[in-house]
Image (cartoon, rainbow, N blue to C red):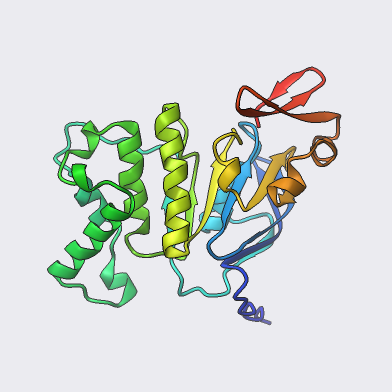
Length: 262
């Protein structure tokens, strides 16, 4: 008997229930639930190895969970994706706008796009991410922050309803990282796109997050930042006493034996 079609739910663009994953026989995720509302920024937060990228791959549909399911009430709504690491050859004759153009697939959508419409869509995406001034520069010669903007433009050029970003702040200097966070907040406000972003550091993302899935030991504490980033909730998640400390304009989750990445 086939499974019933997922109920259309205007309150979420994606819903995950009971996600469990084993890699090489080792449990990585265990019974994780997550809802992604339209226009929300959802942070998958945790230390390295906590399962953030694994969960993102499950949400993206490129990794099948051992148990559980992911539902997208409106499968016509597209998904944009920016992976954690993309090697860009500085000598490749590929301009920033060429990378963005690769994000368009009119044939897949069943919409034949003429050259003028293609260029217009690319220009709009570049404008949205503040990348017009280096649109014709070789992408491999751009700074890390500029490349991240181009990759974001590539991901949003097809106007997806959901944007998945794996560690977009990694390897960026503090100023560039803060600029990317501001940009993500602007994107969701302007276009209504829902954003799921992985990070091991809460500090920069915390002011713009609507929901948090904090991962540790294969489990997740999920809710608003005020509901999750608390001593009692994280102590229950880690199964040992934890404290949330604000110091030097950063947020730390502290265990008895030291500091754990937050």
